[in-house]
Image (cartoon, rainbow, N blue to C red):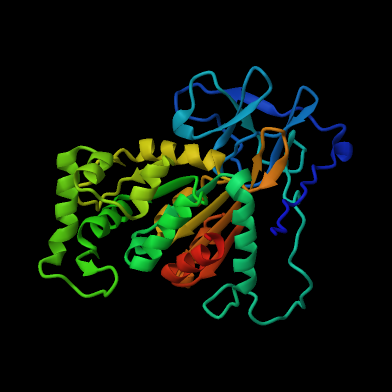
Length: 362
């Protein structure tokens, strides 16, 4: 039995803001350029006083700007996507005094009691994560049918036979609704399917193959000759792995290119802003995000996420973010970049995936 329930959101008390002014809006004069004194969004729910109503944007993103539409809805837009005539919110106070209220206490706080001075209040390799795992199992069982689970994967997820198998099993069991990664994850996962290696090392024994350093390059070449990942899988009769499971399940796979890419594979998006737009599509839908062993990709996706999501029935719920890495520095970096709602777990990602499969996939 799953005991998970979403926490209840408490809207702001607007009774003290009866005399608050209407939010101010100024038109964009030049494409891609916001007015002076533009309001930059945070990760928290933010309300704008419009025609005597307090309006909450349904989809938000940190460091972007609010744009008022004719029907009193508010879109949150990147600077580069601003169009001439867009009405951008201006004002930099957050207490309602300019018609803008940032609400940081919508969800119950569960930190418990603690002395002012206490040991082990951070997240490190010495932290006990048992409670975090148990909470994650229950969350994912709930999200399987009621949420949108996005995974952000680094190549370490496919360097080991067991973790690669575990991730594929999680996809097949419905615990993955979208996958965001780079050229490396897809390359080495497909290398594992074709050669049983990752960067030339056997994915089970970790022993190197003779000329194994050619494996990923040969894989990329085969894929480019085939013209697509689907055709590569078909032509070479590949039957296992993360990409095989994702494409078979027909879940969205966003592969964002990098300046350091080999090849790259077909399906890798070379234009950074096109890749960001595709990732943003998934960030808009995300209710839970699990990011494994990819620091820059994790920060990029994490910074697209607000702390909340508005469901079709107008229920406001939290967005859960997990950052998992063997490096304390890597998992804490996302928090340093403003994503304060992230739960960090310092562990080997192979062990993490195997544990999740063990508890979630029958």
